[in-house]
View: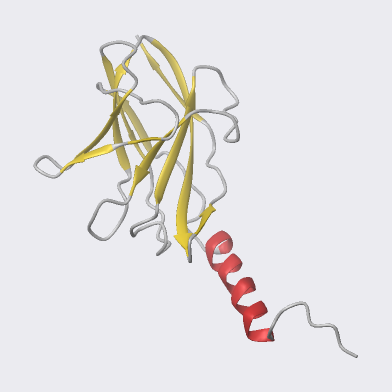
Amino acid sequence: MRLHLFPSMTYLKWIIISIALFFLLPGCSFRFPSIASSGASLPQNGTQATYDPSTGLVSASLNLGTLEAKLQWGPNREATVNRTGGGYRLFYQTNPNVDTANSPFIEVPFFSGSQAPSTLALGGLAAGTYYFKLVAFGSLKGVTNLSSESAEVSISLP
């Protein structure tokens, strides 16, 4: 008697291919190629960034002060990241060693077009140093998958 763990080998192959495509293809690691201060604000954990179609600006706010910063990262090319149900989570805190399991984050979802936004205007910041890590996410058949986290970056606002 044979024991079948999966209904068919096709199903098992689909799972392996899905995992490989999401986690192993180029574009799944993230870097912040440029971070420049200029002014905007971070929201509470899980708050979604907003999109203004008239200006093309994606923004969020923490309401801690009046300073603004602009974050930019290299876009992920995964299909699930760049459609409804996908996007990025920008984890942040004021101490180094951002822990993506426990730190608050801003969700930057796919809004429209060919890819999810890869810039975010952060407003309402107070003077100080902020630390960030980025994770891409995508939804496939109702299951949200997360990429590996980016390297940590920081910005200091005077």
